Length: 153
Image 1: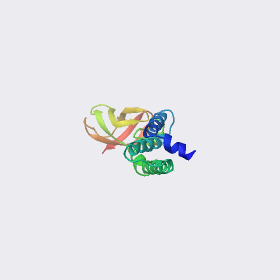
Image 2: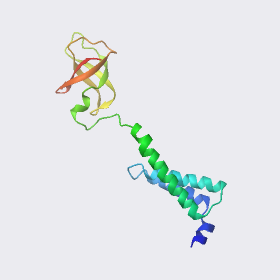
Image 3: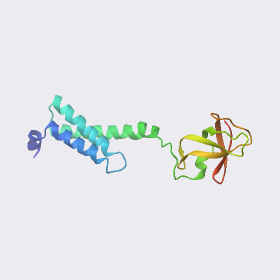
Image 4: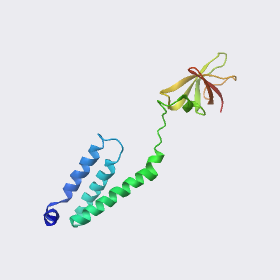
């Protein structure tokens, strides 16, 4: 059986497997199959340059897959923090900094905008004891209904 695999597995088998795994990632959550597919693509390219037995191919594929997955989990994924807080509790607003897009000067309320949506919205009404000009940054301190109580940042 091993002899048959050594003579019949070509570089393009690895390329097809890699493409299938990368494509399958679309239908599976978790971003795991992508790394196994990437390692299979790497094996396909490596087999174009170097001929090796199937046992070594499988060993290198497994090692490359696990290494890529560990690199993803340890270094890359933590930096891909989700900046939206949709669906989270109102505490997600406390301490957030936004920019005033409509001043509260002469009015009871103004409007601010966050760089990313918070609780599903980018723009919020705010109340501040001081007059805040357009373009200034404010920090959320409390929440009163659908209105934020802010202070100058």
